[in-house]
Length: 257
Ligand code: ADP
Ligand code: MG
Image (cartoon, rainbow, N blue to C red; front, top):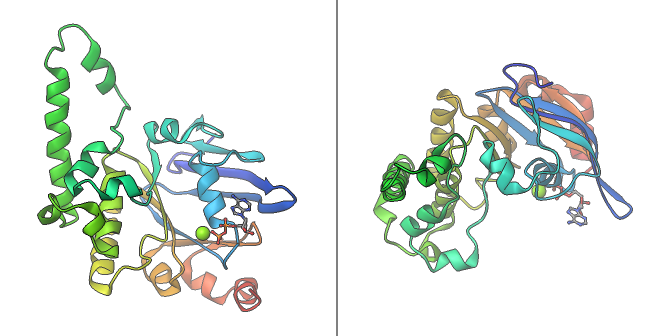
């Protein structure tokens, strides 16, 4: 059902909370290897859309496909196993663990055969190999985000920006294909913001696909090749940044918000 080159497809997605319609028949798809922005005034339904895509909420109706597979209503870990993740804030318990320990606790990629290989006869030592492999990947990922010097630091001692880098690093350890980022730059200083955006572009060039919610319009316009605008739960526009800038309905939605 999902066209080739469009790993994520959301169709007629609807989420009601009691009498309130937070997402109102939203449809869009996301191109492979793209950085697509999702914007809209406060309360537009962006986070609820993310929650429905990633299995945190059960949609009232509509569907979500990852490639040819319908993932609507699956549990978050099942969706992560299939290669779609979102970043999560570091929970309080994890603040009392070091950065490296946080990485080692990140859900392991269970796609492919890795899980099976470890339980098959003849794979003795496999668990230890996996442990070593995970540790190596954890270090490489920390190096990639330039927070390896903080490996032994308690996560609770990190700055807001360093925390965001760790959240990204953790998400990537699950070996995802599509990554949903909900305001990953909130509270991040300009230096780290640049670093995070650079890393996102690096990963995109390697074929990772990103859907980014960010309230800083300049960041969206400068970094995304395509922008989806939500307003009152609906998709108001879906276009290139230059066209979005001049879209009267979008301008009205923001001024009237
Ligand atoms: P955005 O992320 O675009 O700011 P949200 O998706 O967070 O918007 O919210 C969309 C609407 O849904 C808002 O009116 C919000 O109050 C409501 N909403 C979000 N989550 C819940 C919830 N768990 N229960 C009830 N209403 C919710
Ligand atoms: Mg939100």
